[in-house]
Length: 291
Image (cartoon, rainbow, N blue to C red; front, side, top):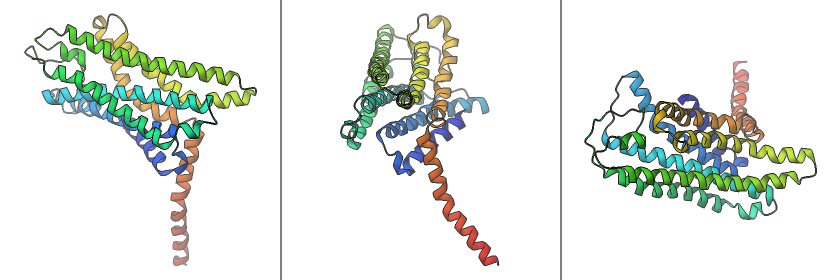
């Protein structure tokens, strides 16, 4: 699953970079999302695989703190990018004539940078509170990566306020981003329903299906992990959901955005044709030389 995730997201990064026709706002956001997925899985999975292969189940304190920071940072970047993609689809469907003027290359760059910087700055101040905690209990972590809850349980200080602030922070980002996505799609669906032809409605809605699928999977996993009640009573179930969120979702994203995407398929075959042209010429000349 990790190999498929790396290959799939690397494929998206490569094909979008090579093909000029994919240098559009929506694919710039998809490219950012693919890079985030690469980083997100690489923070946790290689260390997890090491514990399977070498049975080494230790991690240094500084690596653990860094893992907490980057896991939540890249997770928040995912949510922000999906929100920006919903905004992009809203402009494309509800204001198609204004789309080239509004969604310029500079605006896409600014929105992407804003997602990255916003997440890192937001999580840095919260992570700094965790870094200052004293840890004097047993150093056995009941998890396969340094998640915030299990790490706080090892601290020898009252962490209830910090846990509340962390829950409030995660919930606010999830709820606000999901609210903006829902509002965007309310306008999108109302606009699509006003399209007179059935083929036009189908074509317009097909541009949103990949994004909606990713949103449903990701937010569903987050709801199970952090927002549902009685988290501590079913912690082992939370670890299973965390595996799906860390590995399965980044693996599925490239397939969701490519299998039914005609633009990506056409870009792939254009790239193959360009790469195959010189090769065919070399083989043809080789036959002449052989004769």
